[in-house]
View (cartoon, rainbow, N blue to C red):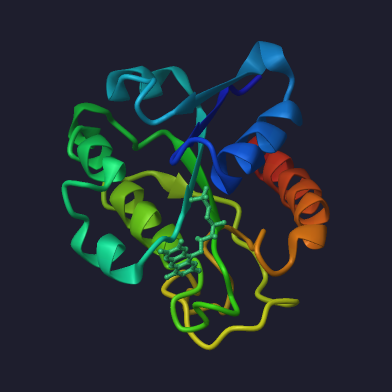
Length: 176
Ligand SMILES: Cc1cc2nc3c(=O)[nH]c(=O)nc-3n(C[C@H](O)[C@H](O)[C@H](O)COP(=O)(O)O)c2cc1C
């Protein structure tokens, strides 16, 4: 059985609520949940599949990845871990009405940190049902590189999206 780690930031908002919902859908014997400040990066080796979640709060912050961004410290440690045999999936919170040009941009930023270290990214997601004009998270094939969620504008769709995405993700994990 694959061991799954759900890792998220920030605490205390929509990202944490969603992270806990995702964790609840796994067998507790095979899954753990941490915020990024509560796990040593070297302990990521304990997991076969890592699910990372974050929010986009200011496209500029993400592009620059300033020292105020807690993800920065986390990313700066990632070279200590071999991600070549790891599966990585992503979920991201955003607001497609207030930030239509940068909807869930940070999904792409987080993804790139793992892709460049050799991880296999799983769990892409259709853009159907969202209204936005631009997102770094949309790939060449037209899919988001992970699960996009909008608790500000489409909160009533979140649970269904999580359930569908996890069904898909679990099938991908089992497919190896
Ligand atoms: C200052 C600020 C900037 C934001 N910028 C973006 C953005 O560029 N793109 C986006 O999709 N959402 C943006 N959002 C929306 C948040 O990502 C969204 O509200 C999310 O649910 C917040 O989750 P959190 O409270 O766990 O961080 C922004 C929100 C704030 C407060």
